[in-house]
Image (tube, rainbow, N blue to C red; front, side):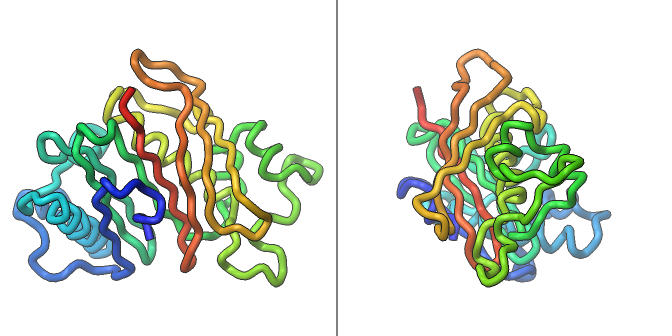
Length: 236
């Protein structure tokens, strides 16, 4: 699914399996999750199995994917990439550094955010664009994606907003090493029709860093109960 959002030069691998095949972790990777619960170990292994499939697509030998500051994946020299996992879906994408400056992907279940999370991750401008009709007290009325008869494929825009911001942060942080708050990216979604389940988005950053753009273009897709977003940041 993730390959539908990224250029052809990006190696993509994903799975709907919740567990990786036995023996897919290197010893140094296994140490990172030695004290974690089974669910965490399974998702950790499954997403790294995806990463090694993407490595193979680029002609790279399989190798460990360790973690740097704030959990950033440590890729082979000359490679950029991103990983994501949620209930029922894992994905990894890789590309050669001369082809793209950075990659950021995120996957989420296509379900509404809890109201307190929605308020915490969204800006007033985003809330006005996504839910123009707001009930007294600041809560959204009928959530897009929950309209009777539309089916589970319709986007839950609050969750998609969360995912898009995660993709922005995964693109930004490996380059800048500066953390972004949710209120430092303003997202606008675009789609071709009211029934479209995929489209693009624009992220305007409200924080500056030397050499970094202030506007990012990404793509989004909702399919099989999963919302995914992706950014491929070009050079220049």
